[in-house]
Length: 78
Image 1 (tube, rainbow, N blue to C red):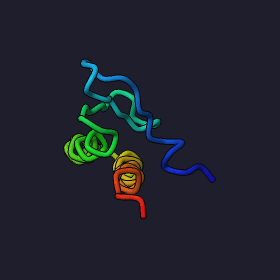
Image 2 (image 1 turned 60 degrees about the horizontal axis):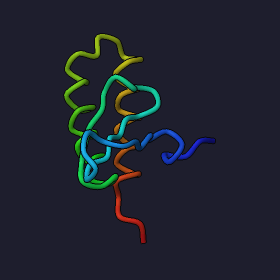
Image 3 (image 1 turned 90 degrees about the vertical axis):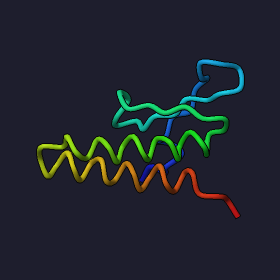
């Protein structure tokens, strides 16, 4: 089974102080932030907005699963 670390991709952002994240299944939906966790929180917002345009149950379920995985990635580690 893959983990959320395998599915959430972190790359360099548009500036030296920013990072860009996207979910492996939705590379077209990206978000930027000062840290990977901040960018992931922004990505959750972008994915939630994408639910509005999900026309099929399969697509909606896939986006909801991606949201859970990104939220897990963004959660503070103990």
